[in-house]
Length: 487
Image (cartoon, rainbow, N blue to C red):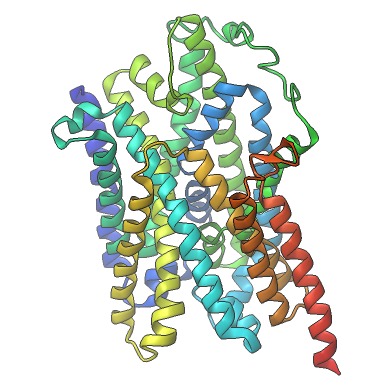
């Protein structure tokens, strides 16, 4: 491991910990401060925090790896995500900011649902909290896997005396995230996300340009020379099922607690349009950069007769080969930023559900604010340990773990959130039916293997049946129970 790389990474870690200490002094005295930063985030921090917590390690590992292996056809995932994020900012963001404060100043999504449907308050809080904790354990594990792969592939020399570099990477990644998340809470997570979002943006602009126009790249011409049929085609080998499975990733945005919680914390509804414009601009550039890394990386490997065993490590390999050690450290810090920004957000949302929707609901209704904050910190640790246990399987694919958790949240909470904010006739029974149906269909679909192969053909992404089933369950049950209640 070169000294310059270690210096860059050390500076990055120190910066994240310093932000955590700043946030600890600024806003961790009560639950609203620890869990929502006092509802006082600026548009820029809200936008980049939402984006960085969304993109995670799949932006620099999973998506470039998919483009590297299959070509431009895999870009449909990014297109679907971009459209879904835009609709999320327009439909969900302003309404959720307004209604969560108006309905009892709800600090968590389960608490908002309970306040919105008081006749099913306890059931909604418990079931939604269980779904959040279970799926976030899997989702957070994907980030841990990405951190382990980074240390195993690009930083093994730095942890050579620590045993298995993959396992060491898991614990180092988790340790730094836990330090600033447990200490600084939501404000620390949001501020570190803002900084990490800037680092990711710079890295994803820099990397494909250097790969294409630097030594061994031969400008962009070598991309067209990749010996794979349809490599630069958006439609080569694309079936209707494959197209739908890719673009429907965008449906997941409406139900991702770690993303939509940013909407609850923005300073005011008036700030939402500015945050939306900043966030969508950031996302567009980052997605194009990730696509560029995958395509240009494949061309570079082919042109220079290299062998790459794991396509998801293309970003790490190129960072080590093409850049000065100080820049390499910065690029690897960008990957850590993508991983850690998402892990910290997910841990905090999961801990908030454990604290507000279990501990304060059933165990200690009169718990003081200081006690609640400390329980939140303990919950962060417990969820992190569960995620590390899952991530010990080094063969886990980052994109696969993300896709499962993304679908679970999207189907369970997506229709529930959209309809609860926009449809006055929705009932508590309908909300509960949609929540349970969406989660159950996704888990059953995965267990039956239908996401890999369905009726002898290609697999169908589990968010499609889960989202449709949840929407229909909410609509049908609400109509039935609504009529009964009026009568």
